[in-house]
Image 1 (tube, helix red, strand yellow):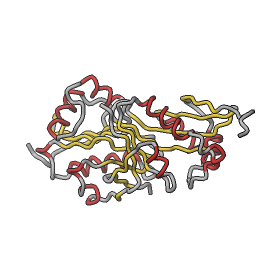
Image 2 (cartoon, rainbow over the protein chains, first blue to last red; image 1 turned 120 degrees about the horizontal axis):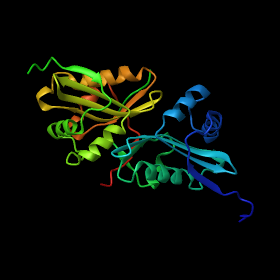
Image 3 (cartoon, chains in turn orange, yellow; image 1 turned 60 degrees about the horizontal axis):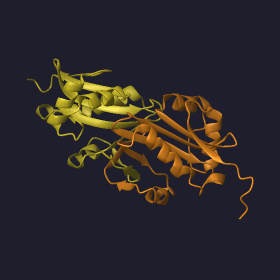
Image 4 (cartoon, each protein chain N blue to C red; image 1 turned 90 degrees about the vertical axis):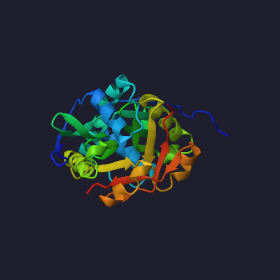
Length: 137
Length: 135
């Protein structure tokens, strides 16, 4: 297999990736999404408790955003990986780093997009039967 | 005490001891014997709505949120004395008012509250996944 010149993917906690690059990775992930407004994305970035970015040659290829009290609960609101970089463990590493930042002791949960169910199963997550939502208007 | 005479407000720093006492009375499984941890949990929250009977804490809704897209209601507790009088529903209503209509409100129900949330207007969310707390 050709392995030369494959850029390494690096991971870091970031406070302020730009809204435009985050929107780009949402689009490139292939997930259905409604987040194409840079002003709204800027607010989501500012108000997040934990953001982990995956970059390849500086280019954003993965993004995870979580809300947490850093003690009891952590809600993973967004997890997106550029479709070109999927299948390389990027999503799993983003999840691992978010959990690490929020604290290993917290209850960690999320809502899976259609098609992502086997991914979360592979991570060892369990389906929750008693989740409820009051959707946004 | 008059069960109907509760006052509701957003609070930034309810006391760790009164919150621990409320969680204990309401049967929430939280680290109530460690006030330092309860204090950190409260400090790490983004939105706390309290119900009080006079000075006494009767109920709490504690959330983490970005105020623009998603809100996770982590704890909803009402003292047994004040339960069945609509305090839980009012705490949720006040939380939703603080968030505005664009924010989805999400929670995981305790087994004992299984039918409550559907009853007050929540939709069941079938696609939630979790890693349980490790300690």
